[in-house]
Every structure is written in C-alpha cells, then in structure tokens.
Image (tube, rainbow, N blue to C red; front, side, top):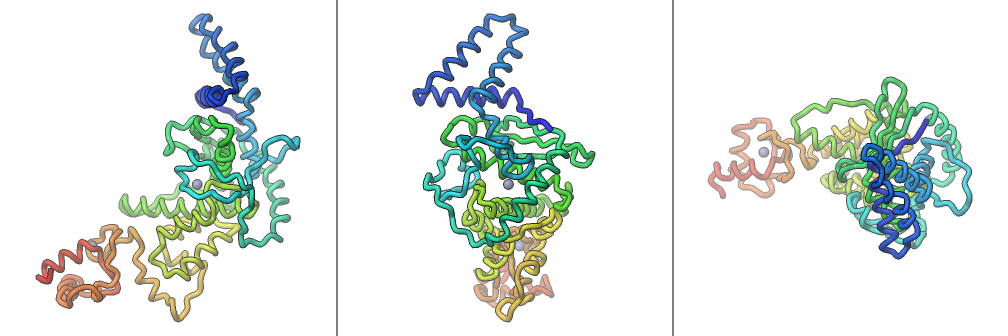
Length: 381
Ligand SMILES: [Zn+2]
Ligand SMILES: [Zn+2]
C-alpha cells in the first residue's frame, strides 16, 4: 500500500507553510526553498513543472514533514499498523478541554493547551482489549488497501474521504483536504483530528462488518436531504465516540455532538433524548444499515436504545413531530409544527380540518401554514 499526495496539495501546502514560517521570523526553510525553486525559472518551460514538483515534494515530505501527520492519522484509526517512533515525534492529539465550536470553524480555532483530559463516562476496562484488536485489524486493512491518495480540496464542502473500488477488492482511499490546514505549525492538532475523523469514515466504508452500501434513499429531495443530514450526524457520533473511548481527539467533543443531536431531536422528551444519545455514544458496533434506518425512522432509533414506560409510551412516540417530517395535511416537510392545534386554536378550526381530513386528530399536529389556512377558512383569525 502506498500513500500518495497530489502535486497541487503539496505545492499549496508548502507555499502556505513556508509563508507562515517566514512571517513568524523563521526564514531558513523559506530561504532554502527559494534557493532551490528560483533557479527553476531559468530552465526550459517544458521542464519547469516537473522541477517544481520535485522541490515541493522534497519540502512537503522531508524538510517540513507534513506527510507525517497523514501517517499518524492513519495509524490512529488503525488503517496502518503503528510504526516505531522516537519520543520527540508528534503524537496523536489527546482530548483536551476547550474544544467547543462547530466542525466548520475548527480550522480557525486553536484548541486549549490545557492538556487535561475530559472525564468521559466510559468503561476503561475494555480499552486494553480493544487496542489489541485494533492492531490486528490495522495489518488486515493495510493489506487490503491499494493506495491512499491525499488531494487538495477546493473548499470546505469538498473536504472529506471516499473509498473508490470498494467492490472490486482493491480499495483506494481518496482524501480531500484544504491545503490551508497544513499552513500553521500550531494548528497541526486540528489537522490531525480532521484527518483521523475522516479516515474513520473511510475505514468504516471498507469494514465488512459495517457493510457500507451506496443506498438509495426514497422520498422527495427535502426528505432525502433530511435523512442524509441525520445519517451523517449519527455516523459522526459513531466515529467520534469510538475515538473518544480510545482517548483520541476528534473534531468535535461529546458535548458538541450532543448539541447537534439535540437540534435534530429536540421534540423527543429530554429523558428519552438523553437515553438515546447515551446508547448511541456507547455503541461499539453499528452497521451502515442500522445508521440509515435510525436516520429514516424514529421508531427504530427509540426502540433500539430505550424502554417505553408509563410516562413515555409507544403512542407518545407516534405524536413526536420531528423537524422535517411531513405535515399530515399538506404533506410538505415541516419545520414549524403546531403540535396540538386544539390547545391553541378555536374549535371551529379543528372542525374545519376534520371536514377535509376525517381521520385527523389534533395530536397528529400540522404545519403552521396549514393551521393559518384553516383559521382563515373558519373565520377565526
Ligand atoms: Zn464526519
Ligand atoms: Zn401543512
């Protein structure tokens, strides 16, 4: 298996890194680069590109050691076995406090330098045995992967990992990353966290037990987007929780992931919501199909992680109107639910709805626009 870097990524990363060093008063690498690169302009035009590429590669891989961060990320998520290393080398970032902030803003935020580990309510006893299986699996993965290609992303949306040739048996991991993440030596822990998180997705995609499939998600585009967004969230939780149990810092903390989860599922009563998140966070083995069906259907997620009680029955679940679920009247994905119109509207509004929708009950709820329409029709607004 080999790790390859695109010339564009190496060029821009080296350029940004050296400029950053130069601005910080460290000129030696910068000067050395120019002493090698500037004479290239004297060469015939046809030879320049190759000559620049060589210098960039020399700096990216050897002088600046930027490829080391990629290798360490691959080790951390068990895609290649751990190499022997000297103690001075940079190690995988550990969980530190002060890691708040969204996924999107990570590259501009420095993480806290406290180095204090966040106390996580996870079972430490299991860790030893998990490490061992990791090592074995790492060798197994390394043998399977044909190549890992690191390319330059054009923007944040373009960033991420993918596995090509998954089915044919010679998988190629393609990672797209912003060159700006390689610029600042003080932000290398954020780069590493990003790479680890993304490689974990790729690792799952190659793991026969995860059983990744390019699934077709039925429904209209907005339902599809919603299911995809929930699926991503659940998969991100699955990735970050496993890293947290191994004390490896990912892009978001447990609290930050809970806030995301809370955003999507705030209609579930708090006790049950916390119970589901806890169950998800403690899951060591999930499959693609499980994540997708949980993202599609609330019933699956609830019954997997919590028990129904007198305070929270299966019937209560039916009346949870999640953001983006279709309104029973207009069938459009709804973000502004009126959960129990009976409690806020005139009786005549309820009757007007039931003339059109005989089986509809107030607890089924409706979108605010439908309620407005029926209020007008009933002449109550
Ligand atoms: Zn992710
Ligand atoms: Zn509606």
